[in-house]
Length: 184
Image (cartoon, rainbow, N blue to C red; front, side):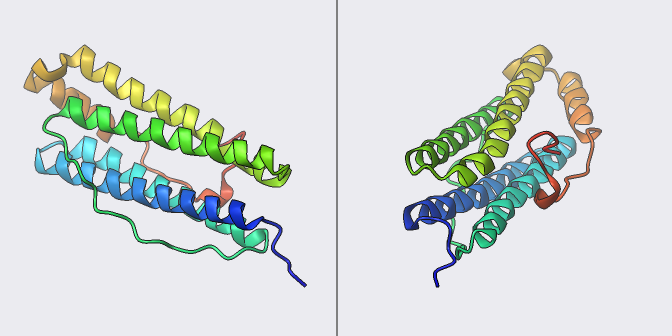
């Protein structure tokens, strides 16, 4: 008896999203390394925490596929292609990445509706809510940098921004314990 409750196309799409989340983790790691090499330990710590959060998202999808009787696969990811030249570019890369990920999540939602796969539609709603928060966070980073002076920010204002991000809460919870009402 076939116990896979996911269509082949939905399973393939979920695996693709797993890979996208894994790629996101690698992008955040690369950006964190860049920030650290520039002397921004607080920014790098913030980005490293987000790398772990993205990995948790990948595992959340992996566990869902398993719970639905499917077989997830870990696919190879590319090395990040672009490193920033400055903090503005770094935060813009974060925002662009989150927008791309939001669009991919919307694709899963649309596919689940087309297939009338209400379990996956319900599961994907957690990610929809998460992406609202992720895009908001990226926009707040950009706003904080603009307030600090953007590309013309003084060393003192960049130091304050770096300290602010370094002092942000450090704990990243396991994806398995997250819900739509409590994504943390």
